[in-house]
Length: 322
Image 1 (cartoon, rainbow, N blue to C red):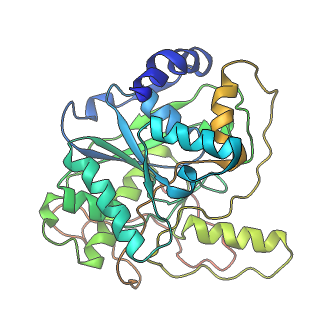
Image 2 (image 1 turned 45 degrees about the vertical axis):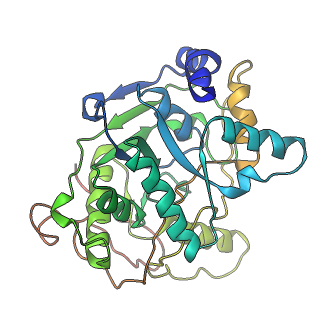
């Protein structure tokens, strides 16, 4: 009830008027049944504008810290997430990763839409980072398609570190559904999970036009933080199969004049870097270097994003051609 009240009465009309969100690919969203919306993650406001442009309800997984806050701000945050029916998940890894997976599957088995961010955290620099395989596990176990979703210009409206959004038109591109039913029963094969994830990220790269970096965003954030402290940069870490909800956020100063009025309602939720992250990260044993993205009838037939996985200075190659 509160979800629809926010969307249709309290925040939705004002956000539509101020930010004029546009959307393409709505025809790809199924009218009924479960599906995963796998989105790039540029801004806290991604979790606001994606549901805003869809007729169907979208459920995100939220880290459990948001439901246990203390003080007036903490209690207000917890109340908001509970009333919006977002789902708390433990981000400590291990068994918690499996519990997060099961939480997402419950949403899909209720034939609802589940929104996740395969990168696991917001991009620190606007590039697209290596996806985590939770999206693949849920797609196979839930028997649902994956819809790649590209958020456009949300980082201009509310970059990391900015509390009050800047009035900028934002957009959403929704790609054609990816059907991985040919891998049914192979959800425990880490090579298949990596191939499915890579294919999803490849489609997302094509849709968003972002440069792709074959390193986890959380690892890049750690390297950037180390550089800021004047310490040597560590090489990119190998693929890790852990739950990562709350990697340190690098500060990105906002630009423009803070707008008064309704946008402060969004700011109140986003204060102190609050965000809904993809709770379902990699689960299971670590895997070696992944195969090419899956396509067709086999995992080795489609091109993966053309990148250098362990570029020592962290600089990605030129963006792959669309």
